Length: 314
Image (cartoon, rainbow, N blue to C red; front, side, top):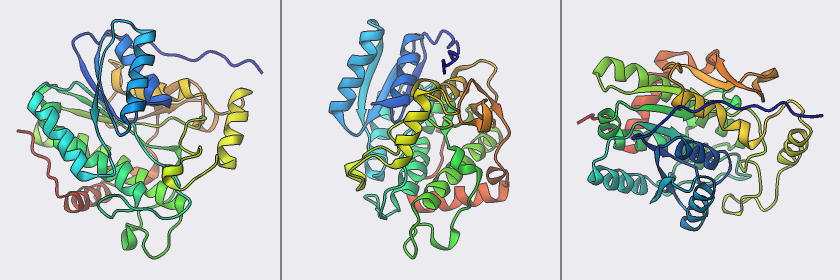
């Protein structure tokens, strides 16, 4: 059936510096292109420089005057996160927008990061936690808006406090849910702590709904040699305009959360269609899994201990 066009307006971002993780392809690349097209200078921290250069070519093809550049980042390595923090810190430029978009999903077998964490928890949550901490002085200087990408998967599940790294019994989806619940709790706690400590930043959450992104596609580096049945079904539904979104519409909630002048802190944005799987972006009720402030404080404290990184604004 024909799909009703879905889009939003991105305000003029001239003079703003934006950083977005996971922007070398898919919806992250779409977000970066929209930010650059609105006048922002965009930094793409990437793991694969070849894909990063291809992304820049794509952005400049659509927006010939775009100001966009690469930096090196592997979120599964805390040393790499620290290096990016040092690099941007030395450049000393205030950051106005940070979109924490990168992520991995459901490796078929348990894998670990360079630091020994289960790869989804270590990349999706701990890597971004450490990145925000490392960039906090620049974010404070820019009075930044920080938007963290969670998932509809975070509507259920829990944090496996007895086995955070899934060493005793690995379950790919449960581990993925844990990583996104922890990340969402962090994003909301970040806003509370910013207000309490005068950091000057605001923090909110977004989720893309369901769309044919690369998360469940073949990822040899994650031990997945072929596309999953789930991504094949999602592609078919998306192509027919059934329930789920497209890669383009999946980028819109994060763009709204990060750039809309009326977007609110400590709020979740996602697709507004049935089941929040697709459709125009809209403000949504915070998932029950993300409402416990005590749980959020525990996530924060444990994350500081595991990463060895503390939040210091200056």
